[in-house]
Image (cartoon, helix red, strand yellow):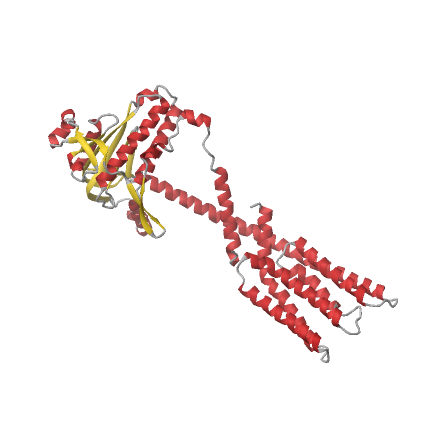
Length: 482
């Protein structure tokens, strides 16, 4: 929202409590009309009682109102009630004179500018409406006696003076409100900027450390500043599936594309891998050049860690196939998976590094190096955690890698998926299984040729609009406007 429009909405909102003053003045006038003169016709008293009841209802609504629609309608209803009461008094009154109800009309003219939560142009329109109503009624109901025009002219000057006084009061109030608005806006902007910077720092921390480790370290940072870098954050996890994936033929595309284009391909590809790791509940450990590795089953234990890890590997192979087709390069993905125990934790005092360590991690690395491009290579230990979800064939990786032979591991390739990956989704209060299509594993991978055809969408304007909406919500919500 534009700054001027936001200020107008803020100014109108700040004047809402003053509407009670306008209605209270109408109630006092109703009480005066009931008592003065004491001897008056029953019809006059009945009409006054009706306006008294209407104003009481308006006052009650103003005390309980929260919705914007109510606050938009209420000032107009209060003004119409005051105007109709003037007309009723003039039409039902006896021995009407040009001075009847003049004091009430002058007060209304002033209160319109100072109490009604409306913009200035609407206040001017309503004030002119009251002025015109009163003058036309005087001309229509009074008989000309030679002094009527002079009296009405005097009344007109008084009402002009009341309008000018109301405009002046409104202007002085507007100056003070604008200063308070700008000060408040600046404070809220600083608050929102600090919140965004804090969120950015949180995202930066979570990009370096897993969430469960970051939470522990934040708690220690606040409790023991003198020992925060001396504590060792390490934990042991059993039955964890470890996945290593390496891009085969990386040198082929490095000679085809420039360094900047190559970085873009890797960035989009690894970003897709990160999204896949969220789907398959993997914990990404590190990216080493063109090597990507992650684990499943830690820090939270999962009985299906091997099943999830293999689906992760298969989806990575499909993602690299898409890049292979688009770049016309013989790139492929070699994936190795092994299951065992790991020691996970943070090393370093100045530059933190989260990593996993164990003999099984080394074996998972050897599973990748002894695999074949385009295939998911698993150990017999990983196979033991499966229940027929995949069909396998012997891979004989122990013949290609001495470490696997010394560990006594037999290896296998995944040949067929018997149980596609599914995720439970709650719809209409019941649990449904949503089956993911593996063809969407290539979504989000952008090659340099595609980028030339359509540049990525800039989020700068979206972020700016979101910031303004948050600012408006925080600013306008300070007195409970919804």
